[in-house]
Length: 605
Image 1 (cartoon, rainbow, N blue to C red):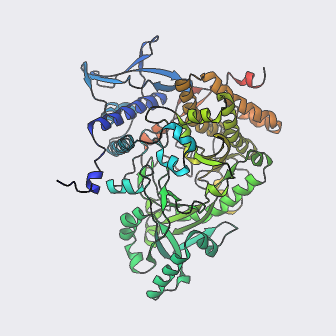
Image 2 (image 1 turned 90 degrees about the vertical axis):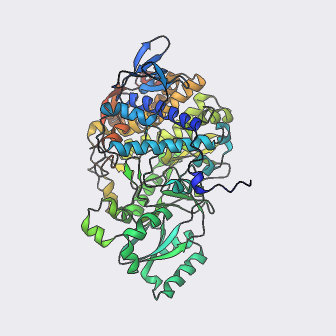
């Protein structure tokens, strides 16, 4: 009997076999225990200090989780692979991530209204992990010569601290294979015409609407779109061409903007020619056919990792002006230029205001964030011959055999670990230190927001992206022009330095140090000494900021423990208020600063 081609219905469950699902749950439960322990939501009990065995007993005393672990710097729980076991009344039981959440629901503090949604996010994340396990991926060594977008699609973690990091509530199983970064399917954008009475276009000083569209949209498309409007008796001069994510078009706009479509304030034009690929941030797409063209970031009204991923048309109006201002600040700073630090400017934006939703709901409401887009420069316009690109998230990636990408890069570079790390930290951390101390400027520099430029498998500089929504000026006394004024954010003095301690130390270096230690026996002390050296080298080179170095002491004995999972558990629909990012932070005690002990040695003492 001839086997019929596999259908989308079959594809949706092809990776859901018992062994793969068990492996996905084992990976997820391991991460849950590690990260929840780090955030002091749970406290495993040491059975034997000598052999590193721990037991976790949820509220039901009949249930026990037993594992071998090492507690590393910054209270990072490294659970030894293959050692985690569960028993119920003494009998072996399967590891199940959803069950663990229900067992821990009281200590996690998640309310009854949020719990089912969080369980949906956990299950969806498990579905994604199982897909990645079933489809495999490149070995860590293959990343050394990997293509920029192949590496992007190969990531298994996204944000490493978040447990429920691939919820994507709103996608169905067909959407998953069409629009997720791990599926890496080609995506063609829907284009619509938006009437100028409702839509606003903004761009950087070196662009115009006409020049931007000429750069980003094929002439054949532009001509065909204008003809489609003419056929309806409409004048293209009264409209702005606008890209829309296909999911957003089919699932939101054709229904909720039906009146706008019927009145021809919005006109469907067709698909663009270029094929794009979803990035780890999911609503941002990379142009696969023309890599030097811009990324396109579009509203995507799915719930993912603490937010509905819409895009505000009101914010879009000021985005290019903000990007021009930050780019100019970086370009005029000799230290940042010396480090090669740069940003990917968000060079153009377009937003559409639905008059009825605008009248009915606050501007920050999800219903007023359904139709907007921005274009972000491609990093391919910023590299030289012999250089290549890699998302910094790859440094935290481990392949199916548990081999690390950072280890493979160090091996391929021919450098010893100390030298490689010193160069990486100089490329990544030094510019961020300077932005903080010289300009009170902070980014959100997690792995997905940084693109590393590599030469001979060594990072030589860093490129920052996702600027307008994830940048702040933590000095409200500085006068900022126009739309740039919205970057001014009031943060309590004692929390300002957490932009370095949390975002760099806890959310990046904690994992890198653990990987190098557990995989390569590279001492934790040696790793953190490299971080201390980088800080001290910067301070030595910039004595003019001595007062700030004392005020925001990166060698302080400890710092506040800021907890991301606690944020998501508290409110998984909106983790923080972007107008007051410090106001919603969740803290749990302090962490011992791993470079405090290295301060003297870094200074040459």
